[in-house]
Figure 1 (cartoon, rainbow, N blue to C red):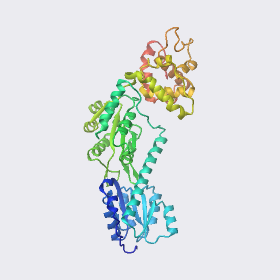
Figure 2: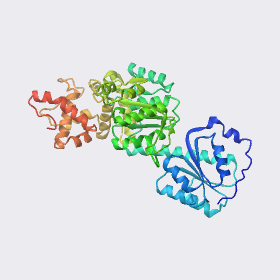
Figure 3: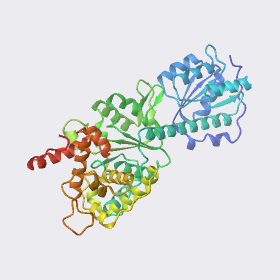
Figure 4: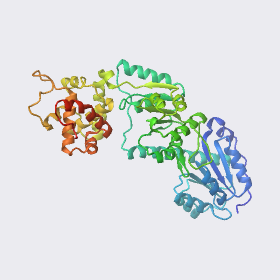
Length: 474
């Protein structure tokens, strides 16, 4: 049992520290103390600082609240009737609950402090304390929680093997028009839908929008809805007991829902409610968390056609399509290819630990003849493969592909130059032959998806049959 609480008078600076302009509407705090005076004091002090404050008189009462709600910070008295505060903290850490904890006690000594730190407490306050001390501990605890979220997001990106996206590259009229559109949209908080073929740079455009907007100080959280299984996507986005979802990790920043058309219909209804109410409820929780993140979505499939086919909700489509920006295919701005190649060489070579490659004018002109069905992503993959082999991959392919006669050299004035589509087909055929037609393995070696590889083979099937040649991979 804690001794009766008598708060010390607050210093004059307290009101300034707790002014509403510093309020964290997305933060939730739980105060656990058996002394009613302490609970009331902390609840009143934090009311102007955070969005939600709950109180509990015992560890057992706190356990019930922790199962039902999500908290960013726990202010926990060590000495409680029944289960102690330290025992509750140890239980939370063993269960994987990442909530920040500030312990409070009237009987602190060195052993207690060491035990508190070992148990996972972020701070320890000695009773009686001033309002400014409590607010300082809360501010630092919420900052630690923010840094933990940022670190988690960085680890998530590294685990997925996804490098941080670069900015939009190019000086063509098409790209300048896109940049101007992003500048206009960045000034408002409306929901934005990016459309365009796969590989056109929708995530880059979303990141550029984030960096231009008032959310630039917060995190940019991308999630590809097509790569998360339907069984996990709900908890991935909205969270569940003991684990925050991506909506929470994106607080104050931008949440980018790539391939939003892949969401299951029941989850589309949930997403619509979140967009309309600006509140998210974790799976199995009774608590609704205010959302401060900007929502940006993208789809490589025409969502209007998906609505007509009954695979996408019309009300969600119109809610996402407040502003729609279509990303141009690379074929529409081929004049940007030299700058894109130079950018990819400069960024990828240090990451791969290889020297940059030289691209001749003839080779660059050859690249600009190609239509790039895989868009900017296909160009980036070509540059990466070229860096690995030490020369532009188009030239290197001639040395490894089976051919009836020596091919013409790039830039040579003799004979008709071989177009890049033919070289691509030859290269894919050779790779498929080297892996005995295993399209999954071939796609990995080529740096493209199996779906893209199958589409290429299907496109060539009619032509191959007309010439009496077996289709690659068959």
